[in-house]
Image (cartoon, rainbow, N blue to C red; front, side, top):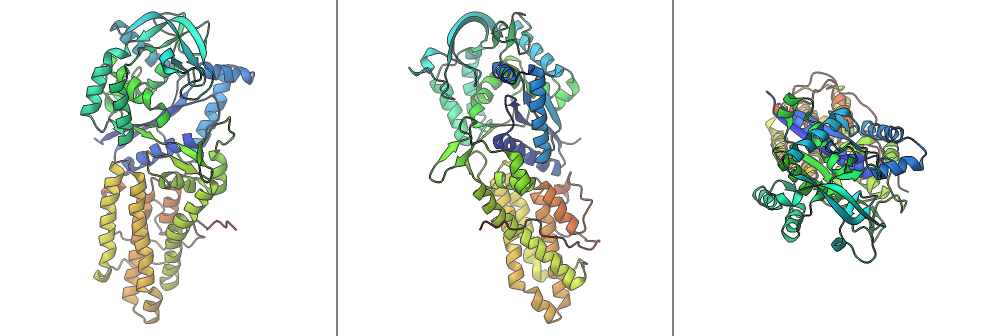
Length: 514
């Protein structure tokens, strides 16, 4: 049986249309999913939408729409984006679906029966945009939300609470014993420091229906709905079959990696593992928190927000540059985990330098030479003189596999580009035009084979990042039926080409910035 590998993205909140931050998280998850499929794993990639809460209810009212009609409209925008940027997800879950609602109620009943849910009166400050309560000690005299800096509402009411504080010492011990549980290391240190230097409050997990009607009914008391964050986090088990498919759940839980942005790290690295502990379920193997894409303003960078009017639309970027170019920029321009600076100029620079000059130029000139010297036929002749190609291919493979196993896309891509740059350099050093002029046909034929074989391997290794372009590159080599699943188990140097190459226009034409 294949090894199973379970990847999740966060659920995206449907109060507005998707932006580049949403695209980034799903591209990251998709790249890892494709890599594990290339290893032959049985991959389950879950994404979806978070559709409850007061913020969504208010957004629907502002547009004079029924809430369900409003969320259906936004959900379609997300699904359209995933198609446009080539996200090959296994499952799309919505928190309004029956399987999720059933999972939430099942989980709540289990935790309640265990004695970890109780009622209490509550007085605190509530942030509608963040769907978060804050106690007096957490805010200053401005009465602004510590996270989003918007106005808070003072609320006093009776609610149900989850005994999160009960599990604080357990979580500290678990995090200390499992250094790979939270990545990157900076986020691990951040969470551990917070747990050791703060006392966790119990989590308010309900809202009275008189204040909020749009949510999952609380199974213990029909006067309440479930708090949106408690509801949404449970998608990771509801998508894996917690309420409706025990066989599937046994196979895929626990998740191998949860991908998320750093602004929701606390919910995923503190709330979520404690919820799972209370449910007597296994922990996910890794919670991976990536950085933000900031808007580059020259000497400074600012966070994207609708209020500032600087949100970057991924649809327009794909229309201008193409899906693969956008994917490549987001994965290559900054190491996963750090903040990145976004600008249109930065995208163009990355396309021109890496995709056009290095990769695109290598493919275009190599195909042209094979057509020119051998009428498009690759002879499969390999001379030991060019052994440095197979040596570099072996080194590239080893580095690539190691970096991908560590979810280090930045260095995985760089290892492939070292191979690309070496192959480009070899053309200048071997001078195939001289070999042709001097009628050294066997050497020329072997060198053309080396170029083609190097390009084949490069296309395979780049597939998680630029899937459409990788297929096009292989098609130009006469490989139009490539099956990527399990391909890393048989990708060694020495492929036998059987079809002629196909000459086309450059895959990545340079973009004129004049």
